[in-house]
Image (cartoon, rainbow over all chains, first blue to last red; front, side):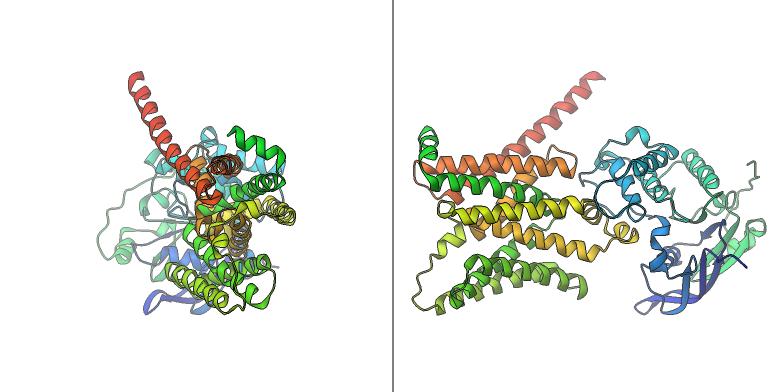
Length: 245
Length: 282
């Protein structure tokens, strides 16, 4: 018996009004994969993620997540959005936001359990926001807010972790530590990450999908200046890097 | 003030009025906090004004005004919520439409009521001194209902209010909880109308929570603080209005307004002091 893939996208197209964003994309991500999606601005990266999450419905084609409907699989996914979906001045502290990741995992009514609190604490520790757990979200820097959102997604104890530009507000060193952390989590969960940073991402992920309305997949070994040039339509300087992990 | 306290010991109508103020403050603190953090103040105003339609129809049919008010508030809350979410209509326009059409409906029905002798002013501006024992009992039941609902579903209410998309991804029925929140706000509006009237009700829902929100950093704290502040404000308003025989509802609202101004001024002063202290420490 073959395992059900984490994500299976079959000939999916999607447009906003008359503006086609995703054209005939097919993709299978196996369980345990660390999959990167790169592509220029407005190439449909976030849209593809929103289709996987069932927040958007494809115009054509089908998507299955963990062998079922995206809607039904939702609570088994941890999602880190590119832009925080909350108002900065909302009166809530970091810990309470991270605890929201437990909704859908824990009992529907009443209070959070001991285990919920432990999960949230572990997640905050992993991304180093445990020292600001009681701070209101209003005072957070962009990087702190982004790490809080990663902690919230980790607190879901997801089977699949989907991250949309998780390090766009974070400096390079913190970015490395977050990707190193994701690499650890990858041991027991599938990870899909969108990034604009071609060179950086290929050091961590196993396979890369290059999206520009259509999708072409590469194993990271075969990513070359030529494929990137085709994708972006211009010459992009690749920084050579070696794997030391 | 001593005159008021003296009268309070002797007169049952004053005791009932005070009981009503204290009980209404509980619902007011809890749901007022949601009105402020979800920014549905204008929508609450719209719901409050459509209550006049329910009152008018109840008078015309000879039914219970408070039942008419409750039904009108609930129906308008659910309709505004559903039309906004399902038909993607502009909230501003919906509020304006419900607000004025609701009032117009109420005025028409009241004008058609035979032997017209309704004291409209009591509903527009409240008359807490007319509150009955049954009214106070009803307020107690509404408070219990609000507390139980919010306590049971606190996580869902908080998650929906904070980040709707993430709540949806965690399997929360965000539409249901949005409309349930509006319905609970509608019930609170009915609760408060007997005290300050439907025109002034938004102020009492918004101002205590907004005042406490200047200083408190979490929803439960704002709820508790706003409930206590609202008790103080309604008590003071009632007491101050008694001796000079001023309208209690309007006096309560003036006190709430002054409290809010005091809160934002104090908040500015605290921020400035903290900055000065930080600058001095360097």
